[in-house]
Image 1 (spheres, rainbow, N blue to C red):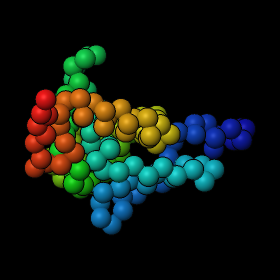
Image 2: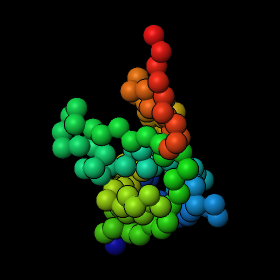
Image 3: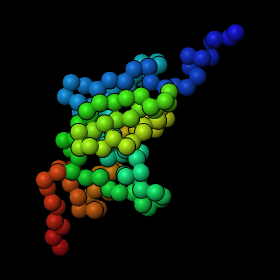
Length: 135
């Protein structure tokens, strides 16, 4: 048996996942001292659930007012994903290792696109803010 390749079979598989004390950030540690910090709000608005993604291209439902959302708990889903339970009741997103890795590795671009989409829609990250665009 050759065990050499098993440990680096897939670098997107986390070694450790933890939620910080304030429950607003997920830390994911990977082999080779790579760590991604993913804010709860970011995970919530980019949740891979049907509720957020819609059922096809262009069917996405923009999530807004989620700045203060926190993570109640996470649980493993099979050996390839976690389910994240958010304090706003959202828990239908199954985050696969590949998706989580992509969220961490491409954080800046994903977040920039989200903020731009939010801006275009005239929505805010704050739950109690209504943005009125005056001409």
